[in-house]
Image 1 (cartoon, helix red, strand yellow):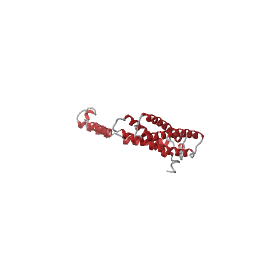
Image 2: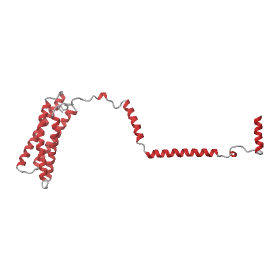
Image 3: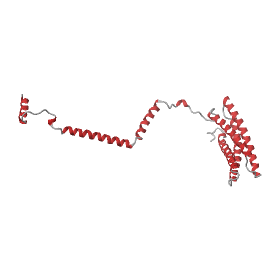
Image 4: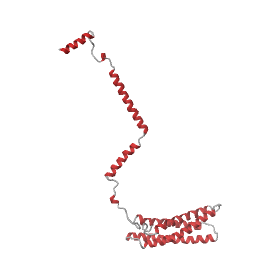
Length: 232
């Protein structure tokens, strides 16, 4: 993992974000259900998410400080890192204060109220802005990544890809052909062949009188006459 991740900041930050956002959510749920029988369950979940999330936020901030001083960067990315660092420090301090306030309130058995929920909502908004700026450091400035892909060596619009897509398209069209259409086509071809056979048979059984001229005299004299002509 040390070789894949240049620093531990990306590892801890996801725990801090998830826990603190869930803490804010369950604080809101607890306030809205203050008269419910499940209030104490919501309160316990809210408190523990806030306390553990604050610990991870502190660890994340420390890891981020080491990343700030160790990741290779240029002038534009340095300015972006500094901006992200300042937002992260303010957000972490606010959550630590709220976590200590929550711990003291829980020790005195004071119910959760909007007095702590509203600052948590504000802190969660700051957390979202801080996370956004941290994501830009990676996806906009490329900080903390081991290598960027060489997009110039791969072309989806090339001729070979087009021919492959055409071949795959023909294969898919054959595989997806409706069996009912094939059956109808086969029946049509058989019917056409049957009509051709019937027409051919009708032509063979036609009478000679309908195709030849009327005969003169009896059949024998015509036959001899034909032979005579043949002899001449």
